[in-house]
Image (cartoon, rainbow, N blue to C red):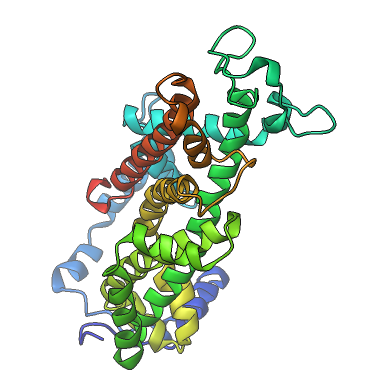
Amino acid sequence: MPSSTRAYGPNTDEVIHTMRNGSNATEEKKLRPALPHQPAATASAAAAPASAASASAASAAAPAPASAPAATAASAHPGAPKKKHSQMRDVWRRYRKSPIAMLGLFIVIVMFLLAISADFIAPGDGKNPGYDIQDLTNRFQVPGRDHIMGTDQYGRDIFARVVHGTRVSLSVGFITVTISMITGVALGAIAGFFGGVSENLIMRTVDIILSIPPILLAISVAAALTPGLYSAVIAVGIGAIPLYARIMRASVLTVREQEFIEAAYAIGASRFRIILKHILPNCLAPIIVQATMGMGYAILWAAALSFLGLGIQPPTPEWGAMLSEGRMYILDYWHMVLFPGLSIALVIFALNMMGDGLRDALDPKLKK
């Protein structure tokens, strides 16, 4: 600790606060360092004539004018609580200044509402779910009044499949980001805080994974597993872990040198508590931004795996699988690939705009 700072015990400030409330000034003087002697001018000012003191008392006893500023009333109540500014409120205030970020947030909210209410928007018929109701008499219908997005080769309504596909794609993106973020943050925190052999082992493994193209890694993992939802989540999630690990390690290396970490060591806090209570909360801003953008990439890679037949399998309505089914009819029935492709592009655009807005809102350089 710096030489100008006076060392106290871990509970000294609490004792001092208690003594202040109990008006025990004598014991407080024993804990606080002695103040320097007052200069001679102060003593001479204390020996002012009685006439000046009486004049001051008379002026203080005079009633305050009706037009006194609000600061006088505030000074009359020094114990009044001050208005606190919430950090989340400040972030939201900066975030909503960006129209593009607000547009992205609106689109994401609409997508989540569609995913939640998919069973009410496109209900089933009792035998089949809403996305798998076949009507062979209405095959390849173009968008119209009865089917606003047309039908596919089995007569299934494409709008119903896109709505139910929203639930599947968002679920894949959310689960993938959650698993990869938790794993990457834990590995990055260990590597950045402890260093040494653990850091070399973790970061060299991360470098090896990053040296492999993401789509090639996802294809390799998915091909080794049974095609399905969980295979897509695992294949995409493994490729995203190194990004969170590197971001977290860089943030931990910066935060662990701060003075409040040294203070936590001084009062006897354990390493686990320092990481959990002091380091992680100060490293979440870049992680949140990366998670927002990473969800869009997870949806894209999962759609790519389904398009190649290694991800979610039909008849489950996944946007990539719908593109794969409609690619052979793209010249004659364009609507079969247009609407699933637009859905993928729209949700990725919205998530990227949200990520940009959060990056600007969480930037400490913009705080006032």
